[in-house]
Length: 128
Image (cartoon, rainbow, N blue to C red; front, side, top):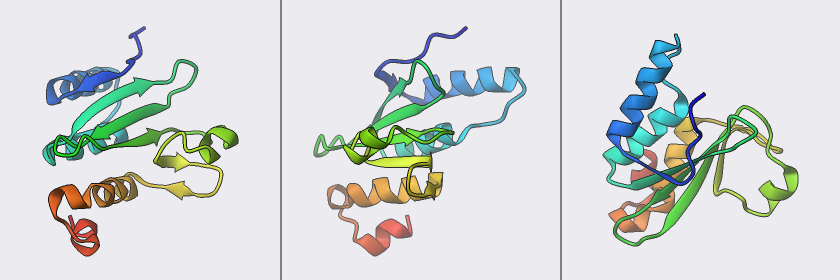
């Protein structure tokens, strides 16, 4: 079994390796990989933490310009209500205790969070 990542820096080479492993096992590209590729294309630094007991992935997106960060959780199950309400993550992809959100919504929320770093307006961020 592959060792789960703990605050692992994500780059294109790492994502390619993960994708090759998925393809070898008969799976396609996962949404968290698509999200990471998009964020890398925008020039963000990324790190990955994989939960030990579940398939949840936590991606921390950091701006090189401001060093601000934004944490996105990808999962196929609801988070612990208290952790969610306590602000464990800035955005939840998949099910949470209030709604279901998509990868596209996570990209939009992340870009909106960093809009000032890029000089985007809210409308430009939504169209990015």
